[in-house]
Length: 457
Image 1 (cartoon, rainbow, N blue to C red):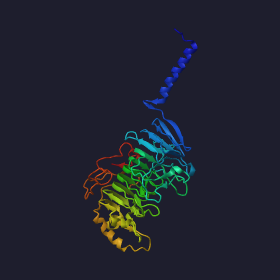
Image 2 (cartoon, rainbow, N blue to C red; image 1 turned 45 degrees about the vertical axis):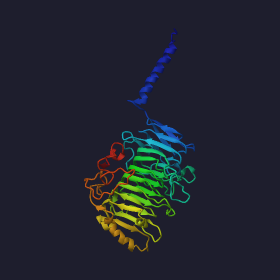
Image 3 (cartoon, one colour; image 1 turned 90 degrees about the horizontal axis):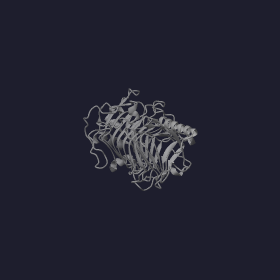
């Protein structure tokens, strides 16, 4: 038997003390102490890796998930972007052929925010433009010449910023129970990053239960592609809430949009695309159960604009508290969004409007035209469109234009919904109410809107 020396005993005691201190210092209950890891991308991307909830990840500059790489993010993980404008901007970008698996839960959402946000009020809810945002790029169809483009918000010198292709079922991964806060950095010349940008993202990608809060530019912008979106909340952004263009032809259901009272623009903007985007595929979103709360009167803002040959279907939704209604572009060209009505590609029907266009049903639908264009024929048609498409002007108690600093009502005060549009047979959840909420509060527990009591359900 070997007897320990006095020196050995001292080393053993010191080692034991170290183990006790490590276990005590690194854990609070069963939760590991958070360690901060700064992520810098010099071209190699993130690699195939997992970000875990016991670390805090700080994005320094543009960080890409490169083609062939898979970034997995555990539920409860917090990712913070460094502040900075121009070439000092920070964002997470999933490149074409890359994949993100970010599955939060209602108990443990994944949070993207700015560095310095302690999640306990250190950053005001309405603070905008403090970091970049989250960008997902895929290989689904666009309607642009050449079938691909370079995503806005990323310098043209970065080849990993390309998106588009021919794979409509492309799979860029999974996004679930994610809160994206305070983004929208300006990288120069008014080129701002959206809260969540989807470029050419395919239908194989799963996206649901996403919250976008106080982005400087659009909340959610979708450039082409065919991805489907469900349970999305967008609030207090500086431009449009829900912007769809370049041939996007996916489905969306249960969307809440609350405009910024100072700077918000449209709740929904649908455009065909650039140059002027008349090609196929048309921008043809199917949108159901949208609840849109505008920024009030005397703003000159529309609740929806549809232009540049954009089309689609918007039904079983509720829109409140906006100066102007739905504006559809009319031109003297062979193709425009108004003519998409004639082709059967544009149908806005079975919706509820309140405190929009002074509640005059004859003023809710209008054509948008350049000065000098004769609009007498479409103007006459639009006078009958409201009734023909079975809309109604009715107060369901949603929104509160005179109490911006108080919680907003998002649940209808009545379930007496008339003229429900039938749901398409595939993908959509068939419910018997209009708007994004009635018997299911899908914001509960995981969203900042719920945590800060900004909405009343």
